[in-house]
Image (cartoon, rainbow, N blue to C red; front, side, top):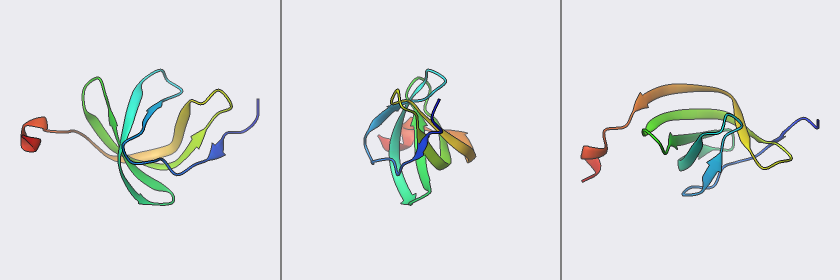
Length: 75
């Protein structure tokens, strides 16, 4: 298997993580950091160095700032 390529996620786009979960990119901080939100439960994190596999799934090298987003704040 080819080593996955580094990508910069696109704000608003939904990605399938290599673990089977779907994440929406809600903010790009810079080329190597993006805020991602898991669609099932709104777990939100800062992904560092996101990579895309040949099958289109993604992973990141590590994450930080993980928390459950309070969706009531958006309303």
